[in-house]
Image (cartoon, rainbow, N blue to C red):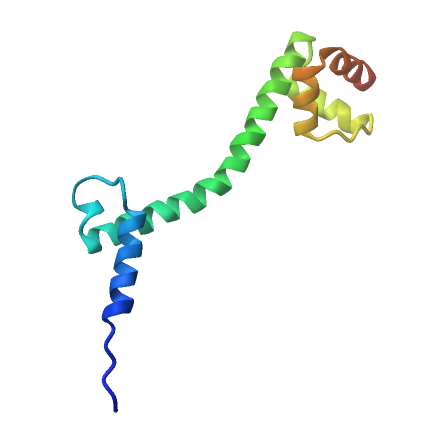
Length: 114
């Protein structure tokens, strides 16, 4: 059986990991094993937080709708219930944009929902 020398592949792999670890502190930027652990942790957190970001954005929409609706004398939950009851199918993103950018239209939506 022939001998397999893996020097090039291993060096390429190590270089890639250290490149990803650029900017880390202490040995995590220069020592392969520490850099590997740090980058795996960072990439894992990045993956999870990209999913969490969607929920945070939805929460911001709900906060802006709640603020705009409370100025007009109705709470967020009552507004959403009234919209469902009146069969107005606007999602939270659209409602938030309307509440921020064109309040007069938001007033009409609330009047229709009541």
